[in-house]
View 1 (cartoon, rainbow, N blue to C red):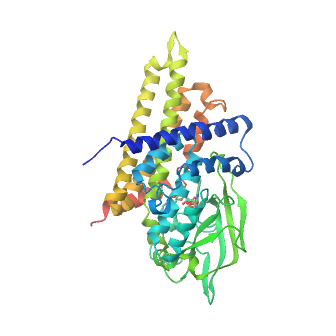
View 2: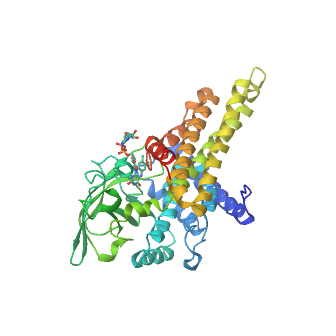
View 3: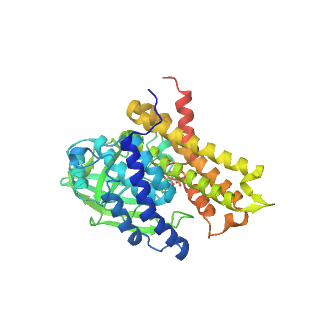
Length: 400
Ligand SMILES: Cc1cc2nc3c(=O)[nH]c(=O)nc-3n(C[C@H](O)[C@H](O)[C@H](O)COP(=O)(O)OP(=O)(O)OC[C@H]3O[C@@H](n4cnc5c(N)ncnc54)[C@H](O)[C@@H]3O)c2cc1C
């Protein structure tokens, strides 16, 4: 059966997330609008994140016996749309990512993953990060590398008598680098093997000797987030730092279609926020004796924006439902579709909002320009639109 009505529990989750966003995220967003982007946003974000974590918003996927909500991907996307409407960067980086990484650990399986999940359960405001991309390796290679072992991440993990030794660098895009308590780092355990069997996932706690945070990246938007390089200089890890099976990193990542779907949900929130912003402005702003919303040229833009929100949301809900009912179809087709479409719709709605607001659309006083910069970032985070579309093309043209 196909249902579009959230349950009473889901509606309560939406109310909780919306209330949290209003009380805690919005004031932070207003502060940044007033004072400009902070050089280091984490001290400002940390207490806000801790409030959200205390509400259980990062434990959505964690099993109830570990103190989590045991929620579904549909629950998560409902929650993340609300956070994304308040601030897409904060929603994506701190909440979507931190909520999804434990799911990845659970899917990877094994004793070390279970031990990590217990630690996560006991640390209410733990922040997580995942590091795949590298400075000299195009991020797209992780998805496109195919059977040639020359392509893909190079950071090396050598097995030693007492565990593992990791050496190399991760790109200056690593989300939450410097803020995270724990990093999921992808490393080459077998350089002669291709990406889908030569990479493994290691859990590296912040503060591990040899792990340092390098150059920071300044984005055109997302001022509350932190992205930086990670440098690993002979980082020594115990044998059980490897999560899942040796060589199983690509399979483990593919087993979590929830990750791109959750990211997509944050952009549904942005598409909605841009629409609501433009609608409110068009109701108040008058030209030729009437609200500009009454002029057909503006009304049609608002209509397109409303359609875009529903289009993005339907894609995301469908992909979220498939994460439970048909995870393979979700991973190969519906999750990349949802992410690419939600970002497209967010960008389009932000552009339209800029137009509806006229001159005010390009001022820092109003939100339309901020939405546009924030939306564009979605184009390349967690694989570019083109790379996602190439994956979709493969899925729809392959037989079987
Ligand atoms: C905000 C943000 C957060 C991020 N967070 C993380 C993170 O937490 N962890 C992490 O590991 N990485 C992270 N990244 C990195 C991200 O995954 C990469 O930026 C992304 O995959 C693109 O890689 P690239 O920048 O190297 O571009 P490239 O791979 O160099 O691509 C450049 C252009 O070429 C195209 N292209 C490249 N190869 C092909 C091909 N084979 N066929 C067709 N077209 C191709 C791309 O579509 C793109 O248009 C983040 C990036 C951003 C912007």
